[in-house]
Image (cartoon, rainbow, N blue to C red; front, side):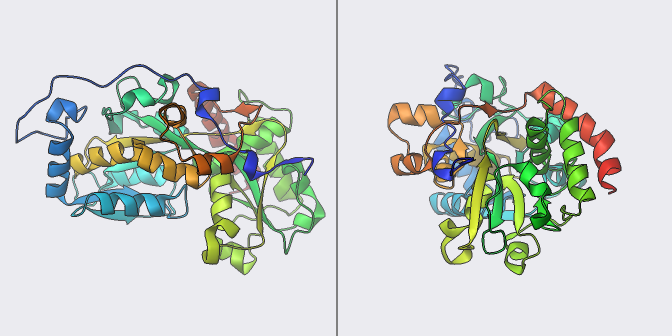
Length: 380
């Protein structure tokens, strides 16, 4: 279509965004059998991968949070980890939770066996809670570009998509070209976003995109808040957390969310998907945002937490992200080494010419705007 970018053209080739880093996590290995994995900053520094696997299996559990099975292929990623490391059971809490919910669980469950071991966070919430995280560098640290990791290992960017519009073509007859089309009468009571933008990165990113489309910028997202105010004023905004169930019921036939999530709700999901669900990435500046992986410094299962980080940074799991339309941080390294899933990469297509991602400073300022203006504008 002339005014949309099809999902076959979405791959965020990391080689085009960042330069591959050359820093590696190396230090003298310990052979101690009583390693305190809670303080280990790499597997090599604490006896190596075999020792890490042994310790993680002895713990026998891993607590993850806010990882829906359809989000970026996490269902298969979790299953892959349990298959690769038998004896470790993953407890997946609050799969539909937000980044803010993750942090709240870390704080409220501190010292308990149920506390999250690992986190998958949007940038704004993460930057506000760095004191809850611990340093750890995975074995293939050098595969992660410098711009996508904390120099000490406190966090690593892991995957990204593009902000997109998903819609049920049996209820919406003409594909929207951009967010401004959603102001039309055809969309009365039909448009939703994935949560509260002051709490959830995915919802906040919908506001960022609206700002870019309406004369705002990554430096000032006020125009994005104003756009959603207009959307509510004309009666088109639906203040409902969207899901595949609300799509199926007709309650939320239009959803602004990450491309990999919209893809997961459509025909690509097979029997569990909606055959009428289509995805549009608006023309112009394509907005992306990497999610970051981190370890709770008070993780109840510290070895399993570190083994999870090793797994999701490996080509095995990074290709699972890619297969779902989420673009992994090690994509450039996998292409160079020949470890990338070529079929998945071909299906994803090419890099958008006008890719935008807010910097840490811009995210911090955007969070201030949302805190000050979202509730007042939307009346919630």
